[in-house]
Length: 341
Image (cartoon, rainbow, N blue to C red; front, side):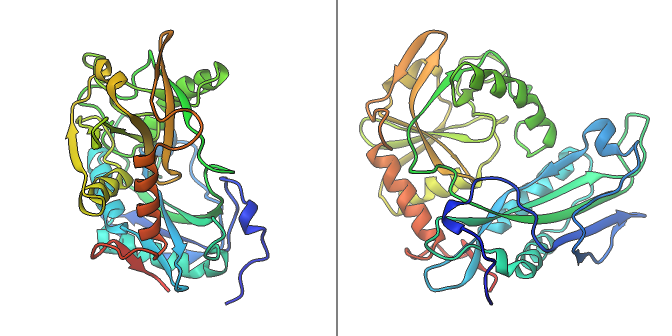
């Protein structure tokens, strides 16, 4: 099938309307069969639950063209499972996991000409999401919901390579204790917008959020989990009930242990010990790993030995190994690569 005539190697990381998207509606206690539509627009009542009380959650994953020419997604079962957790926490109906994966398959197949070719550096970003759609004026869950999936081709998150970032310790909290930090709720990201805009205005790429209870432990940024590498090559990731369980982070932990023979620790990480790490990175779907070169804690600079010029050596090995698995250059663990075409 002939691809769209796009400058694939120079795509940015932004939205581009494609041909088709998937939609299913929950009404009278059940989801309908769902279908593919070419209409990108949604018409809702002014009092819809999503507008009044932010009852919405979403997921993010990618489709890739592998070295042997297949179109695949990476561990969509974990995205499906995480959306179940998000829906339950927000009192939304669960969209069945097997149907989630089927909806992703159908949407990608319907937009096959938009999937970037292998070697272009670009991928097809997939955004499943759910929202309350019927009028709700009293504070309560909606009765009707819509589940949708759209896709958009995106370029690499970092043009010209991933240069280490400078981030800061934030005075704001990303999530409340016993709140919604561990699910992918839209309201979490709304809360992070003011702090990230202010960080950018002051010259920082991201915020490091601390635990909301004691503000002594590292949690995550507005949209990524932290990875640290010790000076004796141990991979350390923060553990907390208010951290989003990143699929990329979980995959990198497995890669570190089973492909690179590293020791892996998931534990509480005190801010006071960050200065002792050799490398730091942010991990997520968009960039896989974004290296961090410097963290500024209210005027005190924490500079990592890996420097500000390029990824640290261990971080680079993790990045190369995981992207090699995703693109089919390295054999994947069973069940990680979901073939669509």
